[in-house]
Structure formats: C-alpha cells, structure tokens
Amino acid sequence: MNEQDKLQWIYSTRGNEELSERYDRWARDYDADLEEKFAYLAPQRAVEIFARYVPQWARILDAGAGSGLVGKYLAEEGYANLVAMDLSQGMLEEARKKEAYRDFHQMIMGEPLGFASDSFDGIISVGVFTEGHAPASSLDELVRIARPGGYIVFTLNLSILERGGFRKKQEALEVGGKWAFVEAGEKFQALPGGDPDVYLQVWVYQVAA
Image 1 (tube, helix red, strand yellow):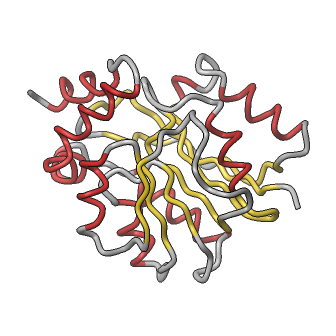
Image 2: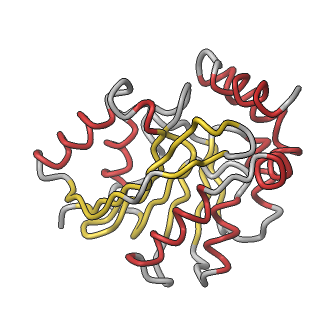
C-alpha cells in the first residue's frame, strides 16, 4: 500500500471500531511512515505554539496521542507531566516506548471522557480533527476537563472547518462564554510527502475562568 492509499484507507473508515482496528494495524510502521515518508509537520508546529502559552509544570493531556510523536516533542521542550489518550491500544503501546507520558488511557473522542472536570492545565490534540475522525462535539468534553484559565491547542484539517461543523462549534463555545479565542496559526501543508492537498491550522483557545 503506497502513501496515498494508506491515508485514504484511514480517512475512509466507518466508525470508531474500524478506525481503532486500522490504527492498531498501522501502529508499528506509523512513525516511519509519517516522519520519513509523509514528512509530517503537525506535531512540531503544534508543540511550538503550545509552548508559548502553557508552562512546563502543567498537567497536560495529549488527546488522540497516537504513537506519541507529540509527547516526544513536548518532552524535548521540558514537559514531564503528560497523559496520553487514544482510541487505539496499539498506538498507545507505541507511545509507551517514547517514555514521555506518565499515564495512558484508551478513550474515544466524541464520547464522554473518563476524566474529572477541571483535570488538565493544558490540552493538545494533533491530527485528530480530520477526515473520518473525531467530531466537532469532541470540543465540549475538552473544555469540560480543562481547568479554568487553561489552554486547548489543536490542529484542524481545513477541509472540515465548515463541512464538519467546527467553525460553528468553536464560535458557539466562544459566544457561550466557555472559552476565548487566542490564536489561529498560519495554514500549512501537513503531509507534503503523502498528500500535499491536506492543509492544517493550529488553533488556540483559553478556557473561561
């Protein structure tokens, strides 16, 4: 399966069970495919922006951690209190090998998350809000489990900004006083080696105090 086919294989999943199974199958080759073949840029871009707002002592959730690429870059920036959450057990096993996270949880974005309200000082989510993945409604739970004044930083595939209801959800949370807009980074090619038509943007919001 070539790079383009593998991406379409992931994007075309029907439901979380199939998505989890496919990520389990991809887990061992995931890092090599994304970093060496796809030239994946999203983790570095998101962590760079995240580090502007969230102190190193913060308790952080990597929501949709996958194989732990984001955790690897966060650890390099001095973050140590990291929690990984993903729907794929196979991906979480790969994330363990990074030795960047303290805890691991298998949970599904878009469903109620098994964390208490106000649990995290910062939340980062990279590569999760894209074709065939987590819905816009996932943002409600991220807001709930973030502490007042904490930051939520996420990448968003621009192809689903409108079609996936993300702009509407983001604005509704802002109008409702749940969070405040902080920053939207420049759009960039996330997978120049795999699918040059995929453009992402990094969004930053601060949860209402």
